Length: 117
Image 1 (cartoon, helix red, strand yellow):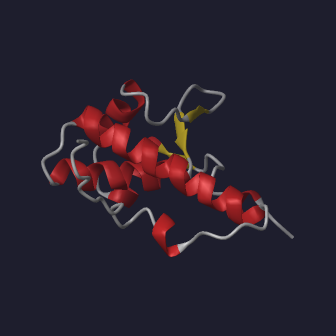
Image 2: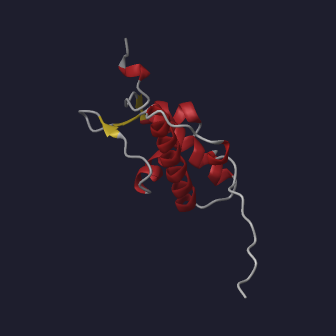
């Protein structure tokens, strides 16, 4: 039997709890909302509520910022990584296979073409 706590998209965490869990400030979480990366649900009282999935995205953005990327670039990368992961899950759900060459953690191979004569 599945519960809401099994759902990674269930908005279970208040802003303060979420910030404490992942080691960031509430202002950082608000900045991710302003950047358009995550849009937390709101409680009846108007308080932000975050899901585990949103917190995973926030952690990844924090990692990229710590590596020196700008917030906009980090949010774009995280968005694309998340969409690719969702596409891979969908392929598997449909009975498809993810080939080793489709591994998003490895860069695609490139080759130099000979110039046209």
